[in-house]
Image (tube, rainbow, N blue to C red; front, side, top):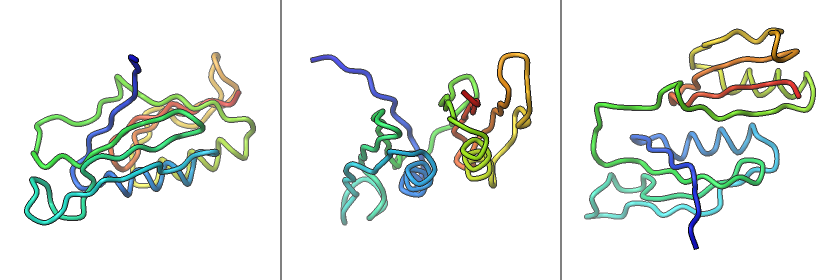
Amino acid sequence: MQSVTTFLMFEGQAEAAMTLYTNVIKNSAILDVMRYGPEEAGREGTVQLARFSLDGQEFMAIDSNVHHAFTFTPATSLYVRCADEAEIDNVYAALSEGGQVLMELAAYPFSPKFAWIADRFGVSWQLSLA
């Protein structure tokens, strides 16, 4: 059966990213983690392959054992609809800490409260008050 899953590649920060995301987004969990062992291609203990869910949507993540000249880009982002102002304020504070604000958390013609950020891992997020 064919399926499509968002796949995030990190360099040694996959577990920290998954932990942040699953703590910030409601109804989320790390589902399983396979780690590199001794004598394997990646640094021992880092994430060889993991699955996690954010509010029921499944993602995959790895810690690449090869350095790449590319990383995440704002051209692809995770879009989060927040139920109320407290939720969007909390998600914004957690995900923007140590990251970059691309659009300030504010009212825009298309949303009563919206922000676009890149978190400290480089993953882009659009946050919108529903």
